[in-house]
Every structure is written in structure tokens, then in C-alpha cells.
Image 1 (cartoon, rainbow, N blue to C red):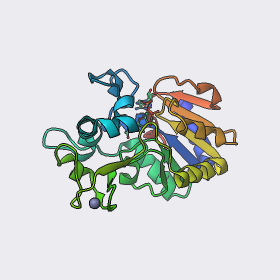
Image 2 (cartoon, helix red, strand yellow):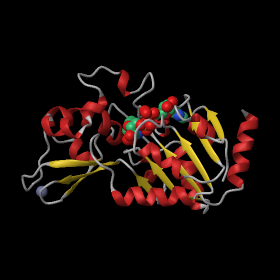
Image 3 (cartoon, rainbow, N blue to C red):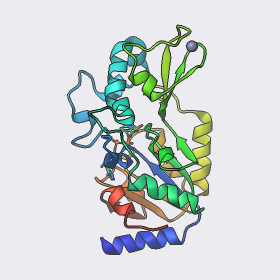
Image 4 (tube, protein in one colour):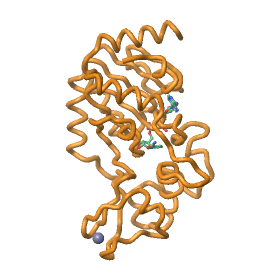
Length: 248
Ligand code: NAD
Ligand code: ZN
């Protein structure tokens, strides 16, 4: 592994337009479970699988249950309580923010909705699936924070009486065009693409990695992914642990 770290360090040293493409695995070391690992959300006991509860049709037909799931599984760790500590950025988020600050990384493209890249200081972040930090009234557009929604009861209502919807792309919903085209542009122009903490099974997000045209495609994931073969260099391990051994 020491040798691998040296290889990865050299690739980073030689690059000046790095793009990072990541997913839920980037935040597991911050205490936010992913969907597919053994201790991930899929393996917890729920009446419906997360993909059902986070779908547009479920949101429309079961708002009460949707918000129950949203508060408990998506907001709790982001907001924190007296009993549950608030998730903080880990070494992976911090290293990427440092790379950007040093002018070596041009963008983070993330499937995560937890805001931890920005909390670590990253500026150019394409949030493919939105963010739980933003929740909008469907009627007047008023913005509500994660805390506002977490502390509300049942189906949250705006002061104008309108329904509030999280700024999160639910299953069955399309991705934002501007976010998509910005992410495509960044990945197309990258001299190095680091893919990390994603099973690469959620489309269309996972398809974005195909826009990379270089020969420095690095994949860092704890488990093998369906697409390990697209990588020029694949590392299996915890991304925070791996990034904490690197320097800008
Ligand atoms: P996923 O759950 O499908 O896959 C996560 C992958 O990360 C797994 O392959 C696992 O092996 C790997 N992993 C877990 N911990 C890791 C670590 N410490 N270091 C390296 N790899 C690690 O996640 P996905 O591909 O992002 O797709 C899930 C969807 O669910 C996304 O669309 C995302 O929006 C959403 N989601 C977001 C969050 C979040 O915002 N933090 C959390 C759960 C799910
Ligand atoms: Zn309103």
C-alpha cells in the first residue's frame, strides 16, 4: 500500500486540473451511512427500501412517511442532536478542499446531499442530487434550512401555507441541466479524474465518468465496483485513510 500511495501522490503532483467524482462512501467516515454497504441504509429495517421512500411518486403519495424517513435518515446526522453528533467533514473532504485552494483541483462532482464538501471549504461543487441543506416552498419559493425541517412535525408547511420540498433530486426526477452540463464540462477538461466512494450504479450520475478523456483515471473505493475496469489505477480502501496519507 505504501507503494500505491507513492504512485497516487506522483499522479497528483503531475496534475493541475483534477476533478473528483464521488458518492456516499466519501461521507461514511463522517458517520453518514451509504446505501449499499452491509451497514448501509439498505440493510436497516424499513417498511420500504430507500429507493422507494426517496422516489417522486412516494413523496407525492406518502408525504408523512417520506418526511419521517427524511428527518431520521437524511437530516439527523447533518443537523445533530444532544444524543447524535453532527457529521463533520473528514480527511477526504478536507484534502479535496486543500487541492482546490492550491489551484490543482477544478471541481468536485458529488452525488452526496449532505453539504460536507462545502463545509470543508470546497467552492466549486456540482451537487448532482441537490442538498438537504436547502428546502423550498413550492408556492412562494421561501428557503428553509435542514434545521427548520428537522424541527418541524409531520409534513412541513411554509408560513404561506404552501408545501415545502427538499432541494434533493428524488428517484424518477431529472437532474438539473446546469449542474449536469457544468459537471460534464469539468470532467471533459480534467487532466486527472479521481472517482471515490461510489458504487457507480446510480444513473445518469454514474455515466458522467465516461466524459473523461485522459489516462489518469483513479478509482478509490472500499469494495469493488461494477466498473473497476475503466480505471487506470484502482485502490481498494477507505478514502479518508488514503487521502490523509497524501499532501497537496
Ligand atoms: P452507494 O451507497 O451506492 O455506494 C457507496 C460505495 O462507497 C460502496 O461501493 C462502498 O464500498 C464505498 N465506500 C463506503 N465507505 C467508503 C470509504 N470510507 N472509502 C471508500 N469507499 C467507501 O453510494 P452512491 O454510489 O453514492 O449512490 C447512492 C445514492 O444515494 C447517491 O445517489 C446519493 O445521492 C445518495 N446518498 C447520499 C448520501 C450522502 O449525502 N452522504 C448518503 C447515502 C446515500
Ligand atoms: Zn411559501
